Structure formats: structure tokens, C-alpha cells
Length: 256
Image 1: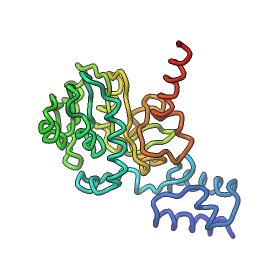
Image 2 (image 1 turned 120 degrees about the horizontal axis):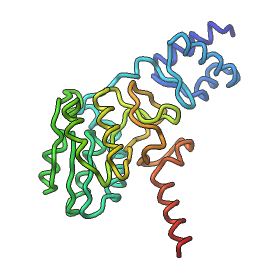
Image 3 (image 1 turned 90 degrees about the vertical axis):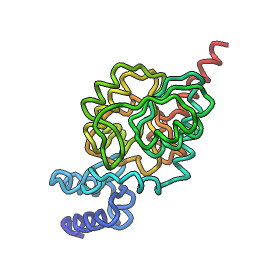
Image 4 (image 1 turned 180 degrees about the vertical axis):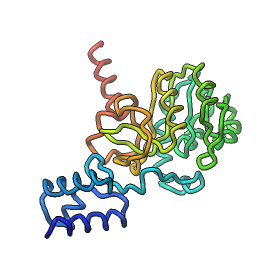
């Protein structure tokens, strides 16, 4: 098969699926991984696709963001599992930050009776937080219509006076190479600041977020611990809360 034919097949398949692993490409092209990597490198240099760890994604996916109502319909059970796992990390009396987003929204049901205080930029969170009698502080600033999130210069000024015990942050893309990403630069700046002023920062990510790219990076992969339901890509293993818990358990055993 000629190189140009391979390139056409890769781009056609990518347009249909949005993303491809190198194994996917190997299966339908029936060529070596080395050949695929050379093809991908050439297509990437022509700005026809984006490389991610273990594969490629379509240029069209990079800045795409669903509206809140659409996000609520995606991966509901997985997001609830992640939310429950994240809520277990919150202790009585904690002062925490809850980022706007659907997975953080599901956390709220597991936070009642913990006597905590919550700062949030998510307008969608307010009713549920108040119904659960949780002390709530809303970040002031410009509201983004698509995600119902508060962001912008005023939000940054508003948030920097706080110091959080823990922060729980949503994400659109997770990559070993590019870290944690989101499509909106103002939301990225706010997330970056929150991580900076948090004692511990956690990223809540369902399986769709791994090896995805988005347009603005807000933190390196080592900056936060990832909370997910079931890790399918072992390359992220060292960055999850499970690995953090193993380390603390090992440390406690040594001390005793």
C-alpha cells in the first residue's frame, strides 16, 4: 500500500471516530507500528491531526465542549462512582473547592452531615448544596453560558484570598505528555490558581477523558491526583489516588 493511501485511510477513519489508538490503525492498515508512527508524524506536521499518548485525535475534537444538559446524559453511573470515591476523601470540618461540572455535582449528595464549607464556581451546584445544608460560597465573576461556570478576571481575584484543604476539579482532557486540559482559557486560569492554593488537589476523570486533548493546559500530570472509576490505561497508574493511598499505608507500616 502506498503512503498516500495509508494517509487517506487514517484521516478517513479519524473523521468517523474522532480518535484512534496505534493498535486500531495497525488492525485496519496491517502495517508495523513503526510505519504508523512515521505516517502519524507526517500528518501531524501538516496539522491534520493531533498526537496523544498511544494514538491520535481529530483536530475537530480539541475545542469541543458539550453543554451542561448533554454532559449529564454521559457516563452517569461511572461519574457517580467517581463522585462517591472523591467524597470519601472529604473529612469533617474541611474547607473545600468544588469545580463546576457534572461529576463534582454528583459529589454533593455524599457531602451532607460532614460540617464542611464549600467554595464553588458552579452555578448548577447551588441548589443541591443548599438543600443539603452545606455552607456555600459562590465565586463571583463572569458566567460561561455553556457550562454554567463562573470564570474570568473577577473570579481569579475573588478566589486567591482562599486556602483550601482539598479541591476537586473537572477536566476535558488528560495526557501524560500535556497534563490536564480544558477548552476555555479563563476556566483554565481559575483551575490553575485553585490547584496552587489547595493543600491537596484532585482531578475527577471518567474514562472518556484519558488520552484526550483540549486547547488549554492548566496543570502538569504530577500536580494533582486522579480520581477515576476503573483505570484502563496503566500508564496513568502512578498518578491516581490508589497509588497515593498505597504510599501512605506503606509509610504507616514503616513508622509502626
